[in-house]
Structure formats: C-alpha cells, structure tokens
Image (cartoon, helix red, strand yellow):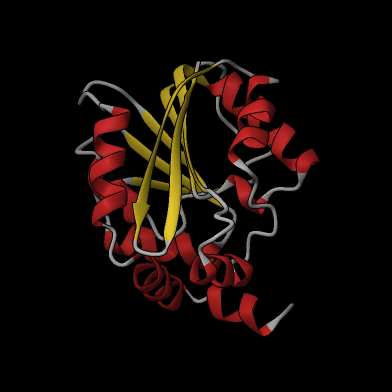
Length: 192
C-alpha cells in the first residue's frame, strides 16, 4: 500500500483533501441536486459513499455503502439519521429493484474494466428508476487538473466518450451534464 493510499484511507484527511482539490463541495452539491431531482418518497442507494458527505442532500430514504470500515464508522457518526453499511459494490446484499435511484459518485474511476462491469450489473439489478453517475473528466489542456488527476487514487479516469460507450453496454445513457469544480471537470450521467 502506498503512502498516498494510507493517507486517503484516513476519513478526515480524505474529506479535507477532496474539499480543497474541488474548491468546496458547493458546485457538486448544487449540480447533483438538480440532476438527480430526488423526491422524498424515492429510495436512494449510494455505492462507494465514503464518509457519507452526499447523504446530506437527501432528507430521507438514503442508504450508503462503502468497502472501508473506517469511512462507514465516520459516516454513521456524522449522519446518524441515515443508513450506512460496509459492503462490496460487486456483490451487494440487496434484492432486485430494491432502490429507486442508485448513485455512483466519483466511484467508477476506481474500478478497472472487469470491476466496472460487475458494479454496473449490480446497479442495473438493484435500480428501479435509474443509475446516476458523477465522474471526473480528463482535460488535455488543464495542467493543474492533470496533476491532480495523477494524484487521484482512482487509476481509471476515463475519457467521457469511452465512459459513455462503456455505460451503454449495461444500460442506456439517457442524459448527461458537465460542470466545473475549481480545477476539476466533472460529468453527471443518468442511465436507465
């Protein structure tokens, strides 16, 4: 395990570094809220929820899962009104069509192609209405962004068109929206 991995496995450092690199969470929160258009009666599952920071966007019916125990401990402490569980994204303990919306927020770039396929099969199995994805998009002429992407633990930041093609193998890309958050360019994608 690299020093970078050890640092980012610490929940507090993970949150602080992510906040600094993105220049706050405000652009992500506002774009995600509009794009997902969550209704209070809809159930939401966030896969790879980390420390649960996005759970605050959902008043109720939210569940977050992550592979790292330490992140889930922090999420439960910070957001006691939400449900969190340690779970493997490639083999989840949920019934078919058990959540209205499934979220993969800054998660898929941590998956190689085989893991990506397994996660997307699970999402398609679990989601009733759709899967919502947020991912960083590489930028050829943004030197600072390129340096930051190289420091990201996710080693599979995909070009938007490649990501879209890969997603279309498992479901239909219904729409997408790109936006900036300081040095990062991100894309939101809805799959049905």
